[in-house]
Amino acid sequence: MRPQEIIAKKRDGGRLNDAEIRAFVEGVTDGSWADYQITALIMAMFLNELDFDEQSLITHAMLHSGEILDFSDLGVPVADKHSTGGVGDKTSLLIAPIAAACGLAVPMISGRGLGHTGGTLDKLESIPGYSVNLPVEDFKRIVKECGYAMSGQTADIAPADKKIYGLRDATATVPTIPLIVASIMSKKLAEGLDVLVLDVKTGNGAFMRDLEQAQQLAREMVRTGDSFGVKTRALITDMNRPLGRYVGNAVEVYECLKILRGEADNLMLPTRNLASELASHLLLLAGIDESKEAAYQRVLTAVENGSALERFRTNVETQGGDPSICDDPDRLLTRGLIEKSIVASADGYISRIDTLTVGKVTNEIGGGRTKAEDEIDSAVGFRCEKTIGDEVTAGETIAVVSCRDVGAAEKAVEKLTAAYTIKPEPPEKSELVIEVVR
Image (cartoon, rainbow, N blue to C red):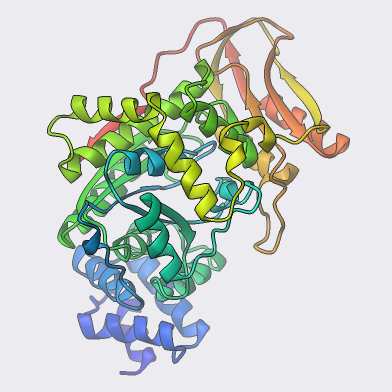
């Protein structure tokens, strides 16, 4: 089957069948399709869209382009969580050890920062010595030893997705729901899961800024997961403000350790609460608990009794990191950075935060990548002192940015000051979890 025939069919609005989609994915995997042919079909898919059957077929083909892991010998439910990406979105670092402490196995394949959002792998690499580049055999072994492992996508897991995603990113064809679903779900289904909970973010700091788009994506991913025999649920959550107190890499790990140690302050509570909510849905889907209330209480107990922290410690040590950070989280923080305050421009209430700007500025000061080859500075970051709904007075510190360079710090302050809107009246209260999609 010639690539030109398949490209022409989709270009003209036709529906691709199983053989045509398998020919495409096999061509991506074995290199028999040229990049320009892959890109041409991706653009045709972007412009003419894929129906649910095509979406399922391409997910299946991408899933089976590599190895599918098997943890059935563990004798416990296998679970994972995935987020569509946000600013200060660090819940994976909490959910994995909490879920493991509650009796689940969590083989978490994560990603690096994308655009203005942070990446779980980048955060983990701020832990001295921590390795996220695990061969499949080591990944399996670590899940068995401590209940969870956190690794990047290897060449063995959904290799077609890695190639297709790179070309989508380079050709402005990322925002199409069927290909987003196929990309996310092919990687997650390759983990050999029993249950999957998705955190679909919406708001001014999310990729899906529009609620209707977020709802559509959530429905499609849940429908796809269920069709592959994985119990799947999605929570649509608010990303109109940074999640928790910190945005950065080492500082986000620091926040998670403070939560696991029972030392969270009020600005860290949204991180703890969202992680607890997502983890409790995992337990409920997996049949560990019969009610949401019981599952949530089990999650809180795992934090309060220290068992989740001990899982975190064991994982860090097993993956080559320095476990002493669990006893002294301050070891993660770099001294001597240039700290500049963002202050309130007027008396009143913080009514809006341009979260996209917070994410972009954190990247610009070194906390993320502009180009794939850029190195990340794990130490730099952003710290919330006030959030939406808080009353402030003119000149009061509402946030702090930590940089290496004075010039970068001054530019950051200028942009971040403009990211805050202060009004005389308090805003309406918004919920962290907007909707649960079953």
